[in-house]
Length: 290
Image (cartoon, rainbow, N blue to C red; front, top):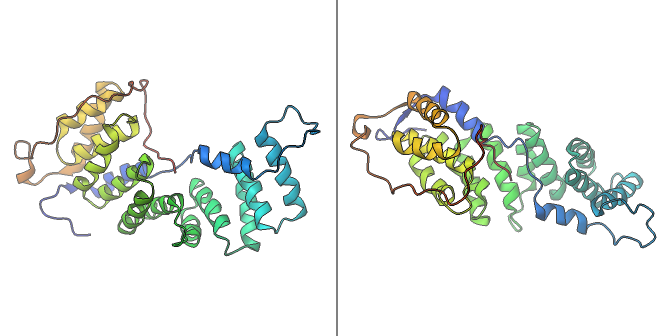
């Protein structure tokens, strides 16, 4: 992509590492909605169930395990069993179940969605992109599928299409900070941090602000040459020394055109202190969940 001459010039090799970190979805958190769905797929617990110490989720998993063992080719049994295994935290077994289920239900969008998102979590990016492409249903768009596919495209370096896909995901889930984060970082990867800034500001300075969002906003500000502002924001979630080191690293990646040197950059709205309690000292992560 040709970057406008008025934009900062980036050291692409150094910046690539930063973007890879911000788009990494290493640990996809089990959302409350997913967990509820997994439980709802189990039949009502029988009053004579001898496993009185089992949780509802464990009972549901046991039920679907038996159904799956009897009918391993059945899409409903396989998908329900895999979802419950994932909810229990046994993602590798869930992945194995979905892998086999996909062999017998190659066009099943529900299986492709679950399998694709887990493949991305296990860093099988090309497989994830193929499965998530199959999983997308224009008639019933799922923001989780779009968000995960956008991340896969970003990890493959296809930032333009990542922006397009993540924009659709954000339209479906405007309150999801993970989607906003990944869309903003895709813009940064394209050399357009100015487009990323308002997206991140809408979350990083709000009541539900997280250290991750503030850290990424500080990165975006640094990429625009606004180092003092960036350091002040980054220091909210760690020591000043750590914050300054991060922003100074960004400074070395960026070569600003003369018109954008300090003193000529338009002033941005003043940063307000976050209303949430400061995070514990230590290293924060930029990984998002979907």
